[in-house]
Length: 392
Image (cartoon, rainbow, N blue to C red; front, side, top):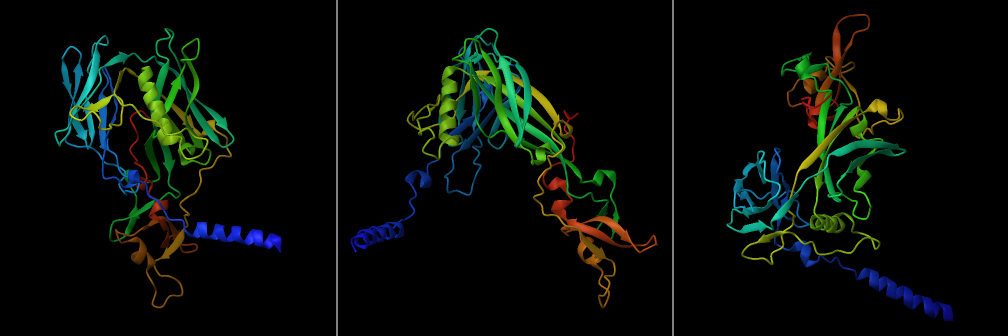
């Protein structure tokens, strides 16, 4: 009896605690405040300088992009020279090659559409060493891409990378036919939608440091990992890696930002910490601004990976659940005869695409077409048929 008197009260307390739990939304999740986000570097070379401005959004918001449009941006040298940027897309501001004096310091000036003025601290120009190589290692579950670089003068020590990737892929089925709105006709070559190209860009912060080494060498620093069943490596893949030299302060900023945005969620992860931006609201220095303006030359290197360089057992996952189905001019057994081609394949708005024709036994007469869902036939829904200029 003593055991039961001891257990049941505890069990009752547990039920009460569990049943009384209520969801809690911290004020930070529902705040109406929106902070300026600044992305980009000042490129003193002949390459373009591109700065992206946006505003933060609440975690509960359905909006994922919030570009800051209509701003006025300029780069100011410590000598007083001003270089203006132009908005080329919503929230994206750019200028051509500046060919700046790398012995001077520079800052970014921003005037938003609501007349708030921001300025970064003046920063020195860092000269980024060339990328030695971009390579990959084949593992059981996929391919790991990495970068090698070094500075023979031991002047860099802190590095950041980003990348853009492009891959060729194909639809599940090749379609030899197309509707013109009244009938099914053979596709012209410029109407083929079997082979396409897709693009993506890095979304994580990639850093490397040789500060604790005797030599300024970065060896096989991970860039990205591609799963063995990814469509990216189903045919041919290319990655362009960009390298940026950082100051120690810039490296610390990106390191803290990485911890706060990518390495939280478990009790073993780093605790949130303050992110010290070098961009300030001139009239309200206490306002948080997310971003860090650096000035550095940019080094880039591109590599290609063909499917033949990878294990032959790797097959892209079929996520479309594609099936073929017959569409008859006169479906057998239907009374009156049903013209499925006219009903399902001919309308311009149809989501079923003709793939191939089928014929009467021993006769050249087409009696129908095999069709499939547009997602399984038209690769342009996920990419473009235009071959990139750099593709080889």
